[in-house]
Image (cartoon, rainbow, N blue to C red; front, side, top):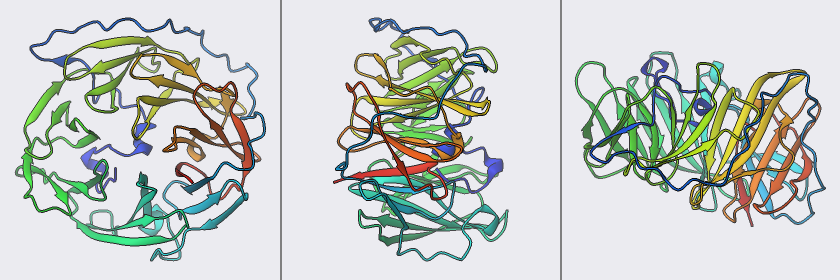
Amino acid sequence: MLIADPELGVVTDARRRQRRRRGIVGAAVLGVVAWLALAPGPPVPRHAPLRLSSSLRYLAGPALGADTGLRLIALENTGRPYLVDLDRGTARLVTGFALPGAVAPASRTTVYPLIPSGAGALAFVRTQPCTRCGTTQVEYEIGRDGVARRLATLTLGYHQTFTPAIGSTAGWVYTWPHRGPCSLALEPGSQPAVRVPCGGLYDVSSAGVLIGNGLLVDPTTGHVRLRVRTANSLWLLRGTLALEATGPSGDLTNLSLVDLATGARRVLGWPSRLHFGLQPIPQRNGPLVALRFGEPSYPPSQAVAVWVLDTSSGRLTHVPGFPALELLKQSMVAWTTDGRLVVASTGSTRTVVGVWRPGERATHVRAVPPIQGYSSFVPLAS
C-alpha cells in the first residue's frame, strides 16, 4: 500500500483506489472454465445522470446516541494520527511516535497506510531522504488508548515497495529492479523471496496478489494462479471474489461481481447517479462491501453516494443520507468489527460522523472535531 517509486506504477493503497484504474487491470478471466451466469440478483435502479443544478446537502440525520463506544484512529492524507472519542467529542494526537516536527510528503516523512489490526490499528511511518533514495519504514501498533507501540523497522531499496499482509503485522516486499528478475518476500519472515512476474503489485486478497497486467499470483510460491485480462477496472474483495466496473471512457456505467476461480459473474447494474469514481471498502470478516461513489466537480462542493453490496446475494442497499455534498479527500467510510458502517464526512464548515447498521432506516449523525481531515481512519469499538 506504500509507493517507494512512483515510476514503478505500484498501486495498492486506498488512496490510489480513489483514482480509477481503467486501462490497467481488468476482470475477464481466461481459463478452461467458461463464463457462468450467476442467478440474477434483485433489480437495481438505473438513475439518470445527476444534474449539477440538483439540490444536495451535507450529510445530516437523526442525532447519534451518547453511548456508541466508538473511537477513531484518524489521519488526513499522510499527517499525524489522532484519537477521536465520539462519545466525549474530543480529539487528541496519538502518542508514542518518533516523528519530526513536520509530517508531510514535502518533509520526506509520512504516516501511511493506516489499517485495522486486531482491536487496534497499524500505522507505518516512512522516511525517504530524497526522491531516488531508499526508504526507512517503522511500523507501529496503536491501541484503543491512543498510544502507539513500535513493532518493527524495515529498510526498503529504491526499487522495493511494501504492502501489508492480510491479517498480519508482517507485509509483502516486492522488488522490481527493472534489470533482472522480480521477487516477493514476507517481512519479517523466515521464508526466502520467491520469483514473481514483473509489472508492479496492484492488489492483495486472500486469493493472492495481483501483479502487472492481471496475474493473480500465489505469494508463497510465485506461481501464477489465474490470468486476468481486460481494459476495465477490477478490485479484489475477499477470497476469489472481485468487483468489476465497466463503461465508456470517462463514465462508468455498470458493476459486476466476478468469481475469479470459476469465471461466474453477476451483473449488478450501477446504483448511483454519480459516475466519476468508485471505491469499494470490504468488511474485514463479512460478506458486505461499502461502495463509495464520488463526483469531484459538484458545485458548490463535491458529492458522494454510498451503497452497500452483499456479495452473498448480490443485493445492493442504499445508505440513508446519501448522496450528499462532501469534500472527497477529507472524508472516508470504514467498518467496525461489530458490523456498523462509520462515515466521516467533511463539509465546508463542519465535520460529522455518521453511523449506520445494515437494516436501519437512518444514518445517525454527530459533529466531531475537524482535526486535519478523515481521509483514513480505523473505528475501534468497545
